[in-house]
Length: 434
Image (tube, rainbow, N blue to C red):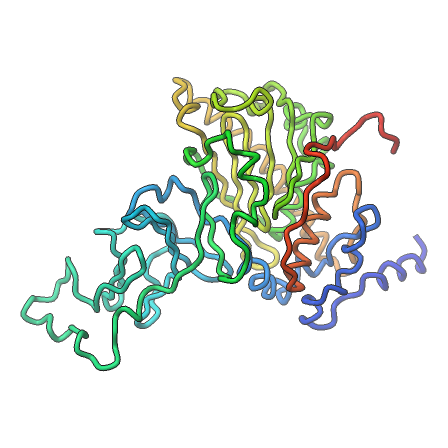
């Protein structure tokens, strides 16, 4: 490559001069081109602390983010505590069965009410560990602070009663609400009260998965990975199969290249499928548990792979699901929580535990292979000489779709992309000319 050629590449994709450049659509003009002409996102999108700070507010604080599973909050009193865009959020099921979400902040002195994870709160009440202000699961402030379990003698409790304080009404001091909704087995929150409803965000996914009875599936295995890479690299690796023959020699025997189709409708997601699923090999595979009986003949032999924008993989197969929720912790580090879920009908199999262990081993094998490669990409993309690469249009259309969703959010553009004209588009054809 000549110096002139290198200079032309660098000039075509210059480094942003200020953080404000990350919010301008023109900054991403090469990624806005049609996929057959497009270049990838700026390297700074994966390495810059300034980009990451803006991304938290414009992508994560304005999108529907999965924070847990319906099975974890199926009964009143059960709660999930998760972090979204740097805010800690409580998700709960109230006494009437309605999902609720609140900022994890006491309205008195801002103490964090609950630690991260899943909890069962006593008497359906959330009690602040600092001054004992207490809230119900509808977010109402019940009092300040004396309730069941108080260690203060009854004769001394009047000193803590605020009912007569001027200008104070506990009705004004309920927990700060957050939008919450669910689809299938997933629970979502959205920090922005003005953005679109979850139904519109998901597009046609609820209809496409209507026969799977997803709301009945429950978590049966989970594992967390620590990854030295940007969360977007994990997603981009997930949504393309260009790398399969070289990175996943075991997976490509179960999910053959020639059996891949793009399965992309309208919605904030990238989708593809494998049909039919091939039989297990010595290294494992996806067979084992029986498929649920409500599926069509085609669904019973197909694997659906969805990347929900911005940070979640939902792999739905006839007998189980593998979900990855990536939690960015800075531009170059991600915590990835993975879960295997299944329907009670499949779990009724007498060999279910053995089959689940096999599934967990196979998914771990595939995931570890992916982690190694995305960490290599993070190392390479941090080289200041790299200014972005050219899209491989035949295999990387989902990446192009995803990266343009990121650009939309960074530039303050709200829209849901349409799907393909055809429901299923073959992604690989051995007879296609190179």
